[in-house]
Length: 215
Image 1 (cartoon, rainbow, N blue to C red):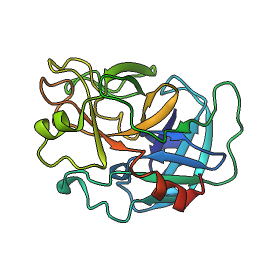
Image 2 (cartoon, rainbow, N blue to C red):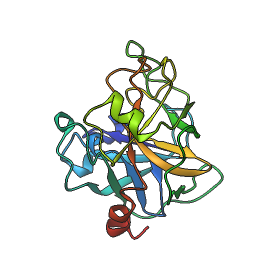
Image 3 (cartoon, rainbow, N blue to C red):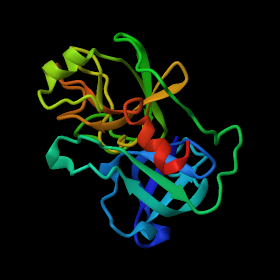
Image 4 (cartoon, helix red, strand yellow):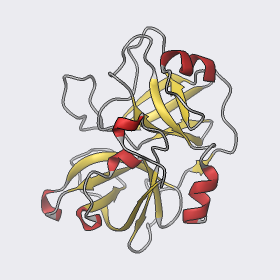
């Protein structure tokens, strides 16, 4: 898990989104996390579990959203992006790449999401890295909750809400059985009943990831 940080002044950069390391140079995140067109305004921080701690900061050389992503007003379809850092990550016990899944998990599979996001719509961002476990939902259930859902999306969560990713968790990894299956994308409200979290389907978009990064 990495923190994607933004700010024109490096010393004042703040956490905006999460991301996952997929190789020595590449990070997977959400397209809607690119809110500043200046690539130099971004830094990837690795090796921390506390949002305010100093870690290993890597300047960004490329921030590439999917070419068919059309923004938050277009239902978050194709909400995926890759970031290339300058140089290479120094791998250690706390800095490791994650495997990308080749198959979508069966409905009911419990997946984990890490992040420094809010606890709810009314709270501040978390300082320590937190984890929530949510079940993968069927495509039909996802479509029932969101009529605009596409095959590029996964839904995960509980019918009665409560546990969910939230604001500033965007871009983080949805992980099942040690493999990344989704990217935190959207949701109308954090933990709202009958409105599960929406995640970009990594398996469906795996060929795009490979075409850009070689991973």
